[in-house]
Length: 113
Image (cartoon, rainbow, N blue to C red; front, side, top):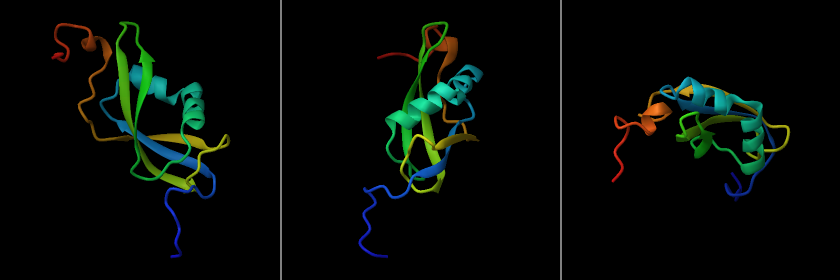
């Protein structure tokens, strides 16, 4: 291989497969799979490479809880540059102990030090 720099994007990816943890709530899944969220990823990410992890804020639920979701790039089709025509698909991966939903605000939710 020539002196190819991994920091320089090559061709535009036609598809990026991203995974989220299986313990992401239905509401969280709904948020990340919306067309507007996919458009957000196209506008805020320049490149995608297998193994990249993106902590993404997916909004405020009806209980006022914020939810950051660890999205992981599983693979790309085409290049590694994200463009306006890049499609995003989702897969489910193993649970990671994500704490969302109403429990974030409740007394049974995570402790805050």
